[in-house]
Length: 502
Image (cartoon, rainbow, N blue to C red; front, side, top):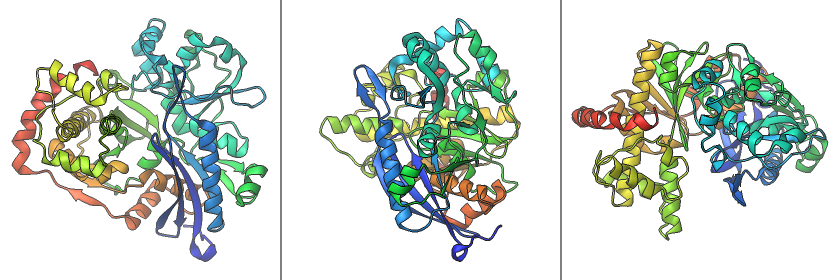
Protein backbone atom coordinates (compact mmCIF):
# COMPACT_ATOMS: atom_id res chain seq x y z
CA UNK A 1 0.00 0.00 0.00
CA UNK A 2 1.33 3.42 -0.88
CA UNK A 3 2.37 5.89 1.77
CA UNK A 4 -0.52 8.18 2.64
CA UNK A 5 1.36 11.15 3.99
CA UNK A 6 -0.45 13.53 6.37
CA UNK A 7 0.52 11.41 9.35
CA UNK A 8 -0.32 8.24 7.45
CA UNK A 9 -3.92 9.26 6.72
CA UNK A 10 -5.92 10.85 3.93
CA UNK A 11 -9.49 12.18 3.94
CA UNK A 12 -12.05 11.48 1.21
CA UNK A 13 -15.60 12.79 0.94
CA UNK A 14 -18.35 10.39 -0.15
CA UNK A 15 -21.49 12.16 -1.34
CA UNK A 16 -23.84 9.22 -0.84
CA UNK A 17 -27.28 9.85 -2.31
CA UNK A 18 -30.15 7.58 -1.30
CA UNK A 19 -33.80 7.61 -2.27
CA UNK A 20 -34.80 8.95 1.18
CA UNK A 21 -31.78 11.03 2.17
CA UNK A 22 -28.38 12.21 1.05
CA UNK A 23 -25.24 12.48 3.13
CA UNK A 24 -21.74 13.81 3.10
CA UNK A 25 -19.48 11.26 4.79
CA UNK A 26 -15.76 11.81 5.32
CA UNK A 27 -13.68 8.65 5.33
CA UNK A 28 -10.22 8.86 6.88
CA UNK A 29 -8.08 6.14 5.35
CA UNK A 30 -4.88 4.84 6.91
CA UNK A 31 -2.77 1.93 5.78
CA UNK A 32 -5.07 -0.74 7.25
CA UNK A 33 -8.30 0.89 8.41
CA UNK A 34 -10.93 3.46 7.55
CA UNK A 35 -13.07 5.55 9.88
CA UNK A 36 -16.20 7.49 8.91
CA UNK A 37 -17.66 10.80 10.00
CA UNK A 38 -21.00 12.06 8.73
CA UNK A 39 -20.63 15.81 8.22
CA UNK A 40 -23.97 16.62 6.57
CA UNK A 41 -27.32 14.91 6.07
CA UNK A 42 -30.33 16.13 4.15
CA UNK A 43 -33.71 14.74 3.06
CA UNK A 44 -34.39 13.46 -0.42
CA UNK A 45 -37.50 12.31 -2.20
CA UNK A 46 -39.68 13.04 -5.21
CA UNK A 47 -41.29 16.40 -5.85
CA UNK A 48 -44.60 16.41 -7.70
CA UNK A 49 -45.15 19.17 -10.24
CA UNK A 50 -48.49 18.66 -11.92
CA UNK A 51 -48.85 14.95 -12.71
CA UNK A 52 -45.11 14.21 -12.79
CA UNK A 53 -42.67 13.11 -10.07
CA UNK A 54 -39.25 14.79 -10.29
CA UNK A 55 -35.97 14.82 -8.41
CA UNK A 56 -35.13 18.27 -7.00
CA UNK A 57 -31.66 18.31 -8.56
CA UNK A 58 -30.82 21.99 -7.86
CA UNK A 59 -31.51 21.61 -4.14
CA UNK A 60 -29.59 18.34 -3.95
CA UNK A 61 -26.59 19.92 -5.67
CA UNK A 62 -26.73 22.82 -3.21
CA UNK A 63 -26.77 20.34 -0.31
CA UNK A 64 -23.73 18.61 -1.78
CA UNK A 65 -21.88 21.92 -1.95
CA UNK A 66 -22.75 22.48 1.72
CA UNK A 67 -21.36 19.03 2.53
CA UNK A 68 -18.13 19.83 0.69
CA UNK A 69 -17.75 23.02 2.71
CA UNK A 70 -18.29 21.21 6.01
CA UNK A 71 -15.86 18.45 5.03
CA UNK A 72 -13.20 20.93 3.91
CA UNK A 73 -13.51 22.80 7.21
CA UNK A 74 -12.22 19.66 8.94
CA UNK A 75 -9.02 19.42 6.92
CA UNK A 76 -7.56 18.81 3.48
CA UNK A 77 -9.54 16.50 1.21
CA UNK A 78 -7.83 14.03 -1.12
CA UNK A 79 -10.93 13.32 -3.17
CA UNK A 80 -14.67 13.77 -3.60
CA UNK A 81 -17.01 11.23 -5.22
CA UNK A 82 -20.75 10.78 -5.72
CA UNK A 83 -22.82 7.59 -5.72
CA UNK A 84 -26.59 7.37 -6.24
CA UNK A 85 -29.45 5.06 -7.12
CA UNK A 86 -29.61 3.69 -10.67
CA UNK A 87 -31.67 4.14 -13.86
CA UNK A 88 -32.69 7.81 -13.61
CA UNK A 89 -31.17 10.48 -15.85
CA UNK A 90 -31.23 14.10 -16.97
CA UNK A 91 -30.65 15.82 -20.29
CA UNK A 92 -28.27 18.65 -21.14
CA UNK A 93 -28.79 20.98 -24.09
CA UNK A 94 -26.02 22.10 -26.43
CA UNK A 95 -25.13 24.92 -24.01
CA UNK A 96 -24.61 22.40 -21.23
CA UNK A 97 -27.74 23.54 -19.40
CA UNK A 98 -30.19 21.17 -17.77
CA UNK A 99 -33.18 20.52 -20.05
CA UNK A 100 -35.80 19.92 -17.39
CA UNK A 101 -35.63 18.24 -13.99
CA UNK A 102 -34.84 14.50 -13.94
CA UNK A 103 -37.99 12.40 -13.56
CA UNK A 104 -38.28 9.97 -10.63
CA UNK A 105 -38.25 6.27 -11.48
CA UNK A 106 -41.59 5.73 -9.73
CA UNK A 107 -43.35 8.21 -12.00
CA UNK A 108 -46.31 6.79 -13.90
CA UNK A 109 -44.90 7.61 -17.35
CA UNK A 110 -43.54 4.07 -17.75
CA UNK A 111 -46.87 2.37 -17.05
CA UNK A 112 -47.42 -0.03 -19.95
CA UNK A 113 -44.20 1.04 -21.64
CA UNK A 114 -42.42 -2.35 -21.49
CA UNK A 115 -45.20 -3.88 -23.58
CA UNK A 116 -44.89 -1.07 -26.16
CA UNK A 117 -41.12 -1.62 -26.37
CA UNK A 118 -41.51 -5.38 -26.73
CA UNK A 119 -43.91 -4.83 -29.63
CA UNK A 120 -40.92 -3.38 -31.51
CA UNK A 121 -38.07 -5.43 -30.04
CA UNK A 122 -39.00 -8.75 -28.41
CA UNK A 123 -38.46 -9.08 -24.67
CA UNK A 124 -35.98 -11.93 -25.17
CA UNK A 125 -33.88 -9.77 -27.49
CA UNK A 126 -33.85 -6.86 -25.05
CA UNK A 127 -32.50 -9.18 -22.36
CA UNK A 128 -30.03 -10.85 -24.73
CA UNK A 129 -28.57 -7.47 -25.71
CA UNK A 130 -28.36 -5.99 -22.19
CA UNK A 131 -28.57 -8.78 -19.61
CA UNK A 132 -30.69 -6.53 -17.40
CA UNK A 133 -33.74 -7.55 -15.39
CA UNK A 134 -36.98 -6.35 -16.96
CA UNK A 135 -38.45 -3.65 -14.72
CA UNK A 136 -40.70 -0.75 -15.79
CA UNK A 137 -38.41 1.70 -13.98
CA UNK A 138 -35.38 0.92 -16.20
CA UNK A 139 -33.85 3.77 -18.18
CA UNK A 140 -34.78 2.09 -21.45
CA UNK A 141 -38.49 2.36 -20.68
CA UNK A 142 -38.13 5.87 -19.25
CA UNK A 143 -36.27 6.93 -22.40
CA UNK A 144 -38.91 5.37 -24.64
CA UNK A 145 -41.66 7.10 -22.62
CA UNK A 146 -39.85 10.43 -22.97
CA UNK A 147 -39.49 9.98 -26.74
CA UNK A 148 -43.22 9.29 -27.04
CA UNK A 149 -44.36 12.02 -24.67
CA UNK A 150 -41.86 14.85 -25.25
CA UNK A 151 -40.13 14.37 -28.62
CA UNK A 152 -39.25 18.07 -28.87
CA UNK A 153 -37.34 17.84 -25.60
CA UNK A 154 -35.20 15.07 -27.07
CA UNK A 155 -34.65 17.14 -30.20
CA UNK A 156 -33.29 19.97 -28.03
CA UNK A 157 -31.03 17.65 -26.00
CA UNK A 158 -27.33 17.17 -26.61
CA UNK A 159 -26.31 14.74 -23.82
CA UNK A 160 -27.93 12.19 -21.50
CA UNK A 161 -26.33 11.84 -18.08
CA UNK A 162 -27.27 9.50 -15.26
CA UNK A 163 -27.80 11.01 -11.81
CA UNK A 164 -24.28 10.54 -10.36
CA UNK A 165 -22.81 11.72 -13.66
CA UNK A 166 -25.00 14.84 -13.50
CA UNK A 167 -23.72 15.61 -10.01
CA UNK A 168 -20.11 15.06 -11.14
CA UNK A 169 -20.80 17.32 -14.12
CA UNK A 170 -22.01 20.13 -11.89
CA UNK A 171 -18.91 19.72 -9.71
CA UNK A 172 -16.36 19.57 -12.55
CA UNK A 173 -17.92 20.35 -15.93
CA UNK A 174 -17.05 16.88 -17.28
CA UNK A 175 -19.93 14.97 -18.92
CA UNK A 176 -19.14 11.24 -19.00
CA UNK A 177 -20.95 8.12 -17.80
CA UNK A 178 -19.33 5.89 -15.19
CA UNK A 179 -19.49 2.20 -16.11
CA UNK A 180 -21.45 0.75 -13.17
CA UNK A 181 -24.27 3.29 -13.46
CA UNK A 182 -24.41 3.02 -17.26
CA UNK A 183 -25.02 -0.72 -17.04
CA UNK A 184 -28.18 -0.26 -14.93
CA UNK A 185 -29.90 1.44 -17.86
CA UNK A 186 -30.84 -1.58 -20.00
CA UNK A 187 -29.31 0.39 -22.86
CA UNK A 188 -25.73 -0.92 -22.53
CA UNK A 189 -24.42 -4.15 -24.09
CA UNK A 190 -22.03 -5.67 -21.50
CA UNK A 191 -20.70 -8.27 -23.93
CA UNK A 192 -19.86 -5.77 -26.68
CA UNK A 193 -18.71 -3.20 -24.11
CA UNK A 194 -20.70 -0.38 -25.71
CA UNK A 195 -24.18 1.07 -25.88
CA UNK A 196 -26.73 -1.30 -27.43
CA UNK A 197 -27.03 0.98 -30.44
CA UNK A 198 -28.68 -1.48 -32.82
CA UNK A 199 -31.47 -2.19 -30.32
CA UNK A 200 -31.93 1.52 -29.62
CA UNK A 201 -32.09 2.31 -33.34
CA UNK A 202 -34.78 -0.35 -33.74
CA UNK A 203 -36.76 1.55 -31.11
CA UNK A 204 -36.17 4.87 -32.89
CA UNK A 205 -34.31 6.18 -29.85
CA UNK A 206 -31.45 8.63 -30.44
CA UNK A 207 -27.99 7.36 -29.59
CA UNK A 208 -26.03 10.55 -30.24
CA UNK A 209 -27.04 11.67 -26.74
CA UNK A 210 -25.19 8.81 -25.05
CA UNK A 211 -21.93 9.83 -23.35
CA UNK A 212 -18.55 8.11 -23.28
CA UNK A 213 -18.36 5.39 -20.63
CA UNK A 214 -15.43 5.46 -18.19
CA UNK A 215 -14.43 2.94 -15.49
CA UNK A 216 -14.94 3.31 -11.74
CA UNK A 217 -12.03 5.20 -10.25
CA UNK A 218 -11.74 7.70 -13.11
CA UNK A 219 -10.59 11.14 -11.97
CA UNK A 220 -12.98 13.67 -13.52
CA UNK A 221 -10.88 16.71 -12.65
CA UNK A 222 -10.75 19.41 -10.01
CA UNK A 223 -13.71 21.24 -8.53
CA UNK A 224 -15.04 24.10 -10.60
CA UNK A 225 -13.44 27.37 -9.41
CA UNK A 226 -16.69 28.80 -8.02
CA UNK A 227 -17.36 25.72 -5.88
CA UNK A 228 -13.72 25.45 -4.79
CA UNK A 229 -13.84 29.06 -3.62
CA UNK A 230 -17.29 28.90 -2.02
CA UNK A 231 -16.53 25.76 -0.01
CA UNK A 232 -12.92 26.50 0.88
CA UNK A 233 -11.96 23.08 -0.48
CA UNK A 234 -9.37 24.53 -2.82
CA UNK A 235 -8.81 24.27 -6.54
CA UNK A 236 -6.74 21.08 -6.47
CA UNK A 237 -9.16 18.63 -4.82
CA UNK A 238 -9.88 15.91 -7.39
CA UNK A 239 -13.41 14.67 -8.07
CA UNK A 240 -13.22 10.89 -8.54
CA UNK A 241 -16.02 8.70 -9.86
CA UNK A 242 -16.02 5.85 -7.28
CA UNK A 243 -18.64 3.48 -8.60
CA UNK A 244 -21.51 5.75 -9.56
CA UNK A 245 -24.10 3.12 -8.67
CA UNK A 246 -24.57 2.88 -4.91
CA UNK A 247 -24.97 -0.90 -5.01
CA UNK A 248 -21.63 -1.28 -6.78
CA UNK A 249 -20.01 0.72 -3.99
CA UNK A 250 -21.75 -1.43 -1.37
CA UNK A 251 -20.67 -4.70 -3.02
CA UNK A 252 -17.07 -3.47 -3.18
CA UNK A 253 -17.27 -3.10 0.62
CA UNK A 254 -18.67 -6.58 1.33
CA UNK A 255 -16.24 -8.04 3.92
CA UNK A 256 -16.02 -11.46 2.28
CA UNK A 257 -12.83 -13.48 2.51
CA UNK A 258 -11.04 -15.33 -0.27
CA UNK A 259 -12.47 -18.81 -0.75
CA UNK A 260 -15.75 -18.05 1.00
CA UNK A 261 -18.89 -19.34 -0.78
CA UNK A 262 -20.94 -16.19 -0.48
CA UNK A 263 -23.71 -14.07 -1.85
CA UNK A 264 -24.41 -10.45 -0.97
CA UNK A 265 -27.56 -8.61 -0.04
CA UNK A 266 -27.50 -4.82 -0.12
CA UNK A 267 -30.44 -4.15 2.16
CA UNK A 268 -32.32 -0.87 2.15
CA UNK A 269 -35.22 0.62 0.19
CA UNK A 270 -34.38 -2.09 -2.33
CA UNK A 271 -32.99 -5.52 -1.53
CA UNK A 272 -30.32 -6.33 -4.10
CA UNK A 273 -29.27 -9.94 -3.78
CA UNK A 274 -26.62 -11.56 -5.94
CA UNK A 275 -23.13 -12.85 -6.55
CA UNK A 276 -19.96 -11.42 -8.03
CA UNK A 277 -18.95 -12.93 -11.39
CA UNK A 278 -16.19 -12.37 -13.94
CA UNK A 279 -18.39 -11.88 -17.01
CA UNK A 280 -22.09 -11.42 -17.75
CA UNK A 281 -24.28 -14.51 -17.51
CA UNK A 282 -26.95 -13.97 -20.15
CA UNK A 283 -28.95 -17.05 -21.08
CA UNK A 284 -32.45 -18.52 -20.97
CA UNK A 285 -32.10 -19.44 -17.28
CA UNK A 286 -31.12 -15.97 -16.08
CA UNK A 287 -33.82 -14.47 -18.27
CA UNK A 288 -36.45 -16.80 -16.81
CA UNK A 289 -35.35 -15.90 -13.27
CA UNK A 290 -35.45 -12.19 -14.23
CA UNK A 291 -31.89 -11.70 -13.02
CA UNK A 292 -29.74 -8.74 -13.95
CA UNK A 293 -26.08 -8.32 -14.93
CA UNK A 294 -24.86 -4.97 -13.63
CA UNK A 295 -21.31 -3.73 -13.90
CA UNK A 296 -18.98 -3.89 -10.93
CA UNK A 297 -15.46 -2.69 -10.28
CA UNK A 298 -12.32 -4.36 -11.65
CA UNK A 299 -14.16 -5.78 -14.67
CA UNK A 300 -16.52 -7.80 -12.47
CA UNK A 301 -20.27 -8.08 -12.87
CA UNK A 302 -22.99 -8.26 -10.28
CA UNK A 303 -25.43 -11.03 -11.14
CA UNK A 304 -28.33 -10.05 -8.94
CA UNK A 305 -32.03 -9.60 -8.48
CA UNK A 306 -33.75 -6.37 -7.49
CA UNK A 307 -36.25 -7.21 -4.75
CA UNK A 308 -38.80 -4.77 -3.35
CA UNK A 309 -36.91 -4.36 -0.06
CA UNK A 310 -37.76 -2.23 2.96
CA UNK A 311 -39.73 0.06 0.66
CA UNK A 312 -42.75 -1.91 1.83
CA UNK A 313 -42.13 -0.92 5.47
CA UNK A 314 -41.15 2.66 4.59
CA UNK A 315 -44.37 3.21 2.67
CA UNK A 316 -46.49 1.64 5.41
CA UNK A 317 -44.85 3.99 7.90
CA UNK A 318 -45.59 6.98 5.66
CA UNK A 319 -49.22 5.92 5.29
CA UNK A 320 -49.65 5.59 9.05
CA UNK A 321 -47.96 8.96 9.59
CA UNK A 322 -50.45 10.58 7.21
CA UNK A 323 -53.19 9.07 9.35
CA UNK A 324 -51.65 10.54 12.51
CA UNK A 325 -49.62 7.58 13.86
CA UNK A 326 -45.90 8.42 13.71
CA UNK A 327 -44.20 5.11 14.39
CA UNK A 328 -40.41 4.89 14.50
CA UNK A 329 -38.67 2.06 12.64
CA UNK A 330 -37.47 0.47 15.88
CA UNK A 331 -41.02 0.59 17.25
CA UNK A 332 -42.41 -1.05 14.12
CA UNK A 333 -39.77 -3.78 14.23
CA UNK A 334 -40.59 -4.51 17.88
CA UNK A 335 -44.28 -4.71 16.99
CA UNK A 336 -43.45 -7.09 14.12
CA UNK A 337 -41.38 -9.30 16.42
CA UNK A 338 -44.38 -9.62 18.73
CA UNK A 339 -46.77 -10.49 15.88
CA UNK A 340 -47.39 -14.12 14.85
CA UNK A 341 -44.80 -15.19 12.25
CA UNK A 342 -45.71 -16.34 8.74
CA UNK A 343 -49.41 -15.57 9.18
CA UNK A 344 -49.66 -13.93 5.74
CA UNK A 345 -47.29 -13.64 2.78
CA UNK A 346 -47.02 -11.55 -0.40
CA UNK A 347 -44.62 -11.32 -3.29
CA UNK A 348 -42.57 -8.16 -2.48
CA UNK A 349 -42.21 -7.58 -6.23
CA UNK A 350 -45.87 -7.67 -7.13
CA UNK A 351 -46.58 -4.76 -9.50
CA UNK A 352 -49.24 -3.41 -7.15
CA UNK A 353 -46.56 -2.67 -4.53
CA UNK A 354 -44.27 -0.60 -6.78
CA UNK A 355 -45.94 2.75 -6.09
CA UNK A 356 -49.30 2.30 -4.34
CA UNK A 357 -51.23 5.22 -2.94
CA UNK A 358 -51.71 3.25 0.30
CA UNK A 359 -49.18 0.50 0.99
CA UNK A 360 -51.02 -1.12 3.95
CA UNK A 361 -54.18 -1.36 1.84
CA UNK A 362 -52.21 -2.77 -1.10
CA UNK A 363 -50.64 -5.50 1.06
CA UNK A 364 -53.98 -6.42 2.57
CA UNK A 365 -55.58 -6.57 -0.88
CA UNK A 366 -52.89 -8.97 -2.12
CA UNK A 367 -53.39 -11.21 0.90
CA UNK A 368 -57.16 -11.26 0.38
CA UNK A 369 -56.78 -11.99 -3.34
CA UNK A 370 -54.69 -15.08 -2.55
CA UNK A 371 -57.20 -16.40 0.01
CA UNK A 372 -55.26 -15.36 3.12
CA UNK A 373 -56.53 -13.44 6.12
CA UNK A 374 -55.18 -9.89 5.67
CA UNK A 375 -52.95 -8.50 8.46
CA UNK A 376 -55.03 -6.36 10.80
CA UNK A 377 -52.42 -4.33 12.71
CA UNK A 378 -49.21 -2.41 12.00
CA UNK A 379 -47.13 -5.13 13.64
CA UNK A 380 -48.78 -7.86 11.57
CA UNK A 381 -48.35 -5.85 8.36
CA UNK A 382 -44.65 -5.26 8.96
CA UNK A 383 -44.18 -8.91 9.93
CA UNK A 384 -45.87 -9.92 6.66
CA UNK A 385 -43.47 -7.68 4.73
CA UNK A 386 -40.35 -8.99 6.50
CA UNK A 387 -41.34 -12.66 6.29
CA UNK A 388 -42.12 -12.23 2.60
CA UNK A 389 -38.76 -10.58 1.94
CA UNK A 390 -36.90 -13.38 3.70
CA UNK A 391 -38.68 -16.02 1.63
CA UNK A 392 -37.94 -14.10 -1.57
CA UNK A 393 -34.28 -14.15 -0.52
CA UNK A 394 -34.44 -17.93 -0.31
CA UNK A 395 -36.09 -18.25 -3.71
CA UNK A 396 -33.47 -15.97 -5.25
CA UNK A 397 -30.53 -17.78 -3.64
CA UNK A 398 -31.77 -21.14 -4.88
CA UNK A 399 -32.18 -19.80 -8.42
CA UNK A 400 -28.75 -18.17 -8.17
CA UNK A 401 -27.21 -21.51 -7.24
CA UNK A 402 -28.95 -23.18 -10.17
CA UNK A 403 -27.74 -20.72 -12.81
CA UNK A 404 -24.17 -20.39 -11.51
CA UNK A 405 -23.52 -23.95 -10.32
CA UNK A 406 -22.27 -22.56 -7.01
CA UNK A 407 -23.18 -23.55 -3.48
CA UNK A 408 -23.84 -20.38 -1.52
CA UNK A 409 -23.32 -21.07 2.17
CA UNK A 410 -23.05 -17.51 3.49
CA UNK A 411 -25.20 -14.45 2.90
CA UNK A 412 -23.42 -11.15 3.57
CA UNK A 413 -25.96 -8.42 4.33
CA UNK A 414 -24.71 -4.84 4.09
CA UNK A 415 -26.35 -1.44 4.19
CA UNK A 416 -28.94 0.27 6.34
CA UNK A 417 -31.14 -2.83 6.49
CA UNK A 418 -28.53 -4.57 8.67
CA UNK A 419 -29.89 -2.53 11.58
CA UNK A 420 -33.11 -4.57 11.38
CA UNK A 421 -31.99 -7.50 13.50
CA UNK A 422 -35.36 -9.22 13.13
CA UNK A 423 -35.02 -9.30 9.34
CA UNK A 424 -31.42 -10.53 9.62
CA UNK A 425 -32.46 -13.45 11.81
CA UNK A 426 -35.46 -14.46 9.75
CA UNK A 427 -33.30 -14.21 6.62
CA UNK A 428 -31.04 -16.84 8.20
CA UNK A 429 -34.04 -18.94 9.23
CA UNK A 430 -35.81 -18.69 5.87
CA UNK A 431 -32.73 -19.39 3.74
CA UNK A 432 -31.07 -21.94 6.03
CA UNK A 433 -27.78 -20.10 5.52
CA UNK A 434 -25.32 -18.32 7.75
CA UNK A 435 -25.94 -14.58 7.68
CA UNK A 436 -23.15 -12.09 8.31
CA UNK A 437 -24.54 -8.58 8.78
CA UNK A 438 -22.47 -5.43 8.40
CA UNK A 439 -21.22 -2.92 7.79
CA UNK A 440 -24.18 -0.56 7.91
CA UNK A 441 -22.39 2.13 5.92
CA UNK A 442 -21.21 -0.16 3.12
CA UNK A 443 -22.08 2.27 0.32
CA UNK A 444 -20.17 5.21 1.81
CA UNK A 445 -17.28 2.90 2.74
CA UNK A 446 -17.07 1.54 -0.79
CA UNK A 447 -17.21 5.07 -2.19
CA UNK A 448 -14.36 6.25 0.04
CA UNK A 449 -12.15 3.20 -0.48
CA UNK A 450 -12.59 3.24 -4.26
CA UNK A 451 -11.46 6.87 -4.23
CA UNK A 452 -8.49 5.90 -2.03
CA UNK A 453 -7.59 3.13 -4.45
CA UNK A 454 -7.72 5.55 -7.37
CA UNK A 455 -5.13 7.60 -5.46
CA UNK A 456 -2.89 4.54 -5.07
CA UNK A 457 -3.59 3.76 -1.41
CA UNK A 458 -5.12 0.35 -2.19
CA UNK A 459 -4.56 -2.01 -5.09
CA UNK A 460 -7.36 -4.57 -5.35
CA UNK A 461 -10.84 -5.55 -4.21
CA UNK A 462 -9.15 -7.92 -1.76
CA UNK A 463 -7.36 -4.90 -0.25
CA UNK A 464 -10.65 -3.02 0.11
CA UNK A 465 -12.38 -5.93 1.78
CA UNK A 466 -9.48 -6.50 4.14
CA UNK A 467 -9.72 -2.88 5.28
CA UNK A 468 -13.47 -3.28 5.83
CA UNK A 469 -12.99 -6.43 7.94
CA UNK A 470 -10.39 -4.66 10.05
CA UNK A 471 -12.52 -1.54 10.57
CA UNK A 472 -16.12 -2.55 11.27
CA UNK A 473 -17.92 -5.15 13.40
CA UNK A 474 -19.78 -7.99 11.69
CA UNK A 475 -22.71 -9.74 13.41
CA UNK A 476 -23.39 -13.42 12.65
CA UNK A 477 -26.88 -14.97 12.59
CA UNK A 478 -27.29 -18.75 12.45
CA UNK A 479 -30.48 -20.40 11.18
CA UNK A 480 -32.69 -21.73 13.95
CA UNK A 481 -33.21 -25.49 13.84
CA UNK A 482 -36.36 -25.10 15.96
CA UNK A 483 -38.22 -23.18 13.24
CA UNK A 484 -36.93 -25.07 10.19
CA UNK A 485 -40.14 -27.00 9.50
CA UNK A 486 -42.23 -23.87 9.95
CA UNK A 487 -40.19 -22.05 7.30
CA UNK A 488 -40.29 -25.04 4.95
CA UNK A 489 -44.08 -25.05 5.13
CA UNK A 490 -44.17 -21.30 4.58
CA UNK A 491 -41.93 -21.60 1.52
CA UNK A 492 -44.34 -24.11 0.01
CA UNK A 493 -47.14 -21.55 0.51
CA UNK A 494 -45.01 -18.68 -0.76
CA UNK A 495 -43.81 -19.91 -4.14
CA UNK A 496 -47.26 -20.00 -5.81
CA UNK A 497 -47.54 -16.26 -5.05
CA UNK A 498 -44.65 -15.44 -7.41
CA UNK A 499 -46.48 -15.99 -10.68
CA UNK A 500 -47.33 -12.31 -11.08
CA UNK A 501 -43.73 -11.05 -10.97
CA UNK A 502 -41.57 -13.95 -12.23
